[in-house]
Amino acid sequence: MSYSWKPTRRDFLKGTAAVAGVGAVGLHPGAGIAAEKFPARNINVIIPTREGGGADRNFRAFSGTWKKYLNAKFEPGFFPGASGRVGYEVYMGKRKADCHNLIFGNMGPELLNWVVKAPENFAVSDYVYFGQVDTDPGCVFVGKKSKFMSIDDIVAEGKKRKLNVGTSRMAHPASVGILALGEKVGVEFNLIPLSGGKNTIAGAVTGEVDFSVLTSGSVAAKHKSVRTLLVFDDKNKLGDRLDNAPTMNDHFGMKTPPLLSARAFGIHKAAIDSYPDRFKILQDTFKQVFDDPEFITAYKKAKGEMAYLNPGGIEDCKKYTDAILEIGERYKPLLSGKA
Image (tube, rainbow, N blue to C red; front, side):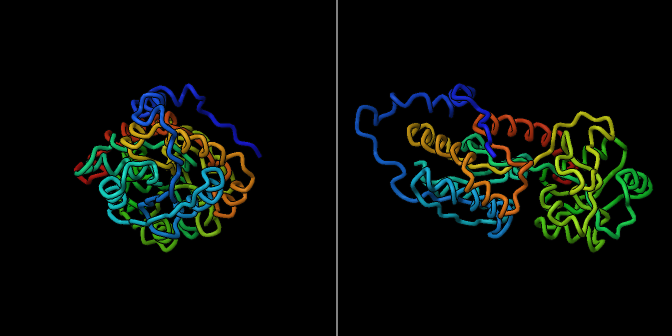
């Protein structure tokens, strides 16, 4: 199956200072001199989550094919902690901005983390997401034994008492989704961070919480033990694997943008500015991966949802970034527990 690349060359040469730098290849200090081979060594990638999780599986599936086109191996380094903050601190503070160092993050939760508390040692604009791999919408779900059979059951119960909601981390698109629903229907939910997707699913299955919110790809993978009640997207793309659950906008007449987690490669902005020729190689080879059958096979083997495979470049990532930061600011008091 072939996946067309959405951004055009024009898209990559407009919109941000980072992209403008790409167009200035002839102006950088190395112009007129034989270009240094790139990559000159392996590509190091910071992954700000635990080894063995969804980001790790996604990264390995993608980099396993990307290395053919880039002619270099990828060396991941895992730095979980503080909802991703540790990984970004290491990347921005201890990794050289030379295009040989990348970060592979989950844009939604990690950007919302900066909304709750801005980074201390760098600005969010000091790094740029340039290679989106997938987008995974959030959802509401319960264990199979739960008395809640529909989202309306949850709303009705929520009008009687405050319900406890499991989430992988406070600052998460799915957390924002349930807060937006609560605001719409006049119900207050108590978010409980359960640290990771596995624990969030377990919380709903065991009844530790009344229900949970999480990325729907992870929930679909556990379909036999959970029941999905609502999806935070324009469409339920997985159908009966998410129990044909309705979308929040359709069911409640809302106009909330899709609340998605999106995994993407990022890079120091300084690297783009200093080495636009190297950055262009990264961009060009990144795009090639999506049409390679080897990657599609690896992605499926890594339990990736084909419906959620969504390649994107700088402009796509910036559009996503702007949207998630805007809605994060709106619900910042609730995400930070200061409401």
